[in-house]
Image (cartoon, rainbow, N blue to C red; front, side, top):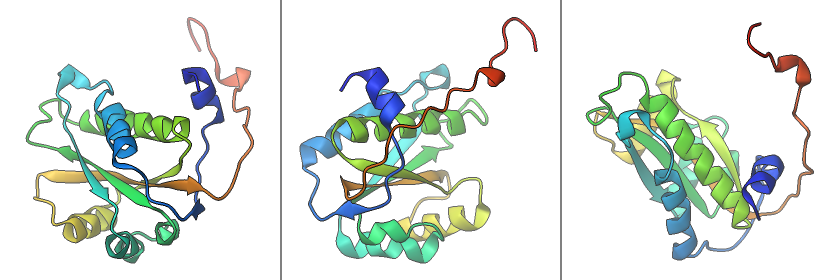
Length: 169
């Protein structure tokens, strides 16, 4: 799958078939995440890979929109290390870029995935920090649920010419 096809056909997938994701594929997803651009090339991200069923089943207890974890084969918690992120506030963009790369790599690898927002919801941040035993300076941005898709969604054309402006508003 080429890059444009991956970008234009990626959809949020919340239903999964059983099946373990090979370690090589997980490494590929993480490599894609770590290849994202970051402010001042600080790369402030950390990734928590969750592939144990009991740990996956705990996530819906702390995230109100994570029911799909009961079917997912994998979760990746994308976090920022605020001790590394010298560029105040840019860790959100940095980790968001890493997240999008992981989502695209998952789709290109035949997986389905969905982005579950954690930050900036303080209740979710604290709950995920507690569940994952994160140090205080590690902030979870999101959780990515992934697995072999049990649903297929058609491409949506989201291009809106009315949102494009040249040279001025």
